[in-house]
Length: 398
Image 1 (cartoon, one colour):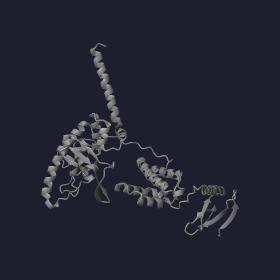
Image 2 (cartoon, rainbow, N blue to C red):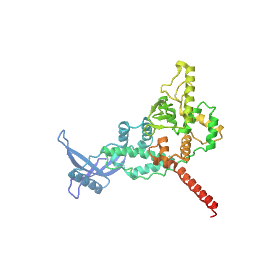
Image 3 (cartoon, rainbow, N blue to C red):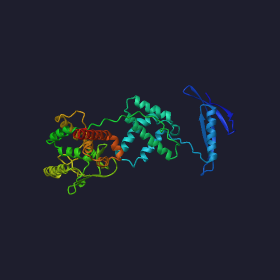
Image 4 (cartoon, one colour):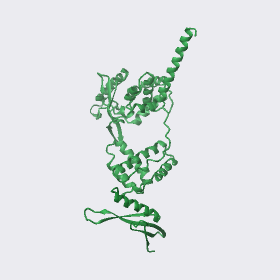
């Protein structure tokens, strides 16, 4: 069926609006279209023509008025023809180079798995809040955890912010979206008696020294596995945390800590004692394998041949130790970090000291994570003061 076009004048006389009817796969579609001159091509001198379409004549008329008014005011921005998928591909390839390799990998994974399949076909300029909100709702309905939905939102929001900076869109449609509530996981530090049992059982484990350093420094697992001997100063008793061991596509490498900054830790003497024992142990293992020794990163914690330790191996040893120590089966290696933080607070360390040792970006973040501990400490302090008052009152017959 041939197209039919019916011209109708706009109310303001800004050209004409055409009614267009098309047939696609036997189904008839009708829409309205108008053209306007954006300006002139500086190379050819020819007019640059743009078109506006809409479901109704009124819609097209309003869009046309807005476009011509912007041209007259000098605020006009040419429509972006890119789709969301095209922009996301550009963003991933060209705007993530300042991020860590694993972060880049995660961003790209979320883009390919969630964002492009759901939103990729939409025009970047036409992407609206409601479309994004429906997308987030569908992720939640599919069983995706609230934290994952929030992470996906963060990636999309970041990509759209860059699109604004590039002048492709004017506002960020993800700004007004409502996200599912993220319930913070319960912190489960080990009790003092559990720590004692764990250390006792760890004495017979090949990774005993690693567990001691973890428990009494609060270092993250990647930081422990990436600790090199040049970062251990036996004279001053200081450990410098400047890197972590990571894996991407099966390749292991060192990168900066999670915070992106180096930090120093002045641990209890027992930690340096454990590191000295580790040095002796490693020298003995190196002598046994000779030229087969393979410690290219000069790491503190390695296997018997000098190679880096992988996380699953460390976790496997940790699980065996906790089982023998009678500790809950859901205990995680990361709980050693929580245990260090909580023990430090109970021992009287101020929140800034704990923040510095843990490598948190701000003291507020440390408070957010361990605020329940400081509240309990304040309550304990109040209880002690009450007992003190009752004691002196009794002594004075009050």
